Amino acid sequence: MSGPSFPEWLEPMAATLTQERFTGSEWIFERKLDGIRLLAFKNGPEIRLLSRNRLPQNLPAIAEAIAGLPAADVILDGEVTWGLPTVSYHVFDIMRLDGRDVTSLPLDARRALLGQLPLRPPFQRVPPLDDPSPWERACREGWEGVVAKRRDSRYEHRRSPHWLKMKCETSQDLVVGGFTDPQGTRVGLGALLVGYFEREDFVFAGKIGTGFDTKLLLNLRGRLDRLEIPTSPFTRAAGLPRLRAHWVRPQIVVQVAFIEWTVHRKLRHPRLLGVRDDKAAGDVAKDMR
Image 1 (cartoon, helix red, strand yellow):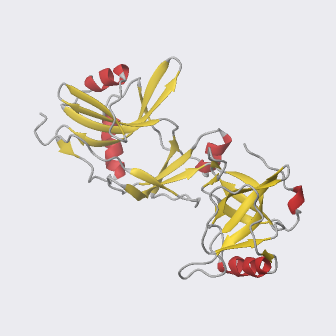
Image 2 (cartoon, one colour; image 1 turned 45 degrees about the horizontal axis):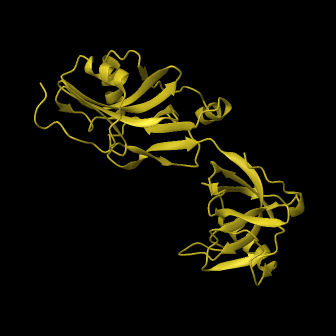
């Protein structure tokens, strides 16, 4: 029977973005779905469907399916997707079952509990991926990415390092127009300020602060110091840093991996792949895919 301790709300566990790519028997990999995060609460006859921002969701087919589960009370976590003409609830975790808080159980044990529930459409189980490089499959098949979850992880009500999301990336050649000073223990430079040419304009595309090792940081700083100029070469430059910035002649081309272009035409989660000494800045073509 459900009791008075049934929670009104539980903060969903969130995955931390990582640029690393790895496998290991201690991890489970799942497809990262492109839908709406949904927590389903069943407390006796009361059914509540809430988004990750605690907003009520009107999904009659899913509410009916939750009500029909053979459990006095249950809290499920998953993602809702729509495919004409149906809606699906992809369930990947459970936080409570028949009066018991199961968030302290390891993920493997929680998945075993989920396996005992008769989840029929519109429920969909989120299966583990057994590919040797699941992130490559994700990008090949047009998925948003994959999520790596530690088998021994408890359900944490926060953004956790025990769930890691690996998003599919695209790449782009860009031109360095400046850099920022290093902070703390970092050497060489803080971030590259990069852009692309569009007709007569040199357009600022964002900052790149990851993907460097110490040798590359120092090497780049030496090259950039020789190209330094007193004013910014960017002619369209919304969002340029105001402090600790240096400007250079736009001659060095770099290859950058990133998730997507933002609505403001900036790089989202960029990282440096390398320097393109084989390519002239004037040959860099903008690709806004």
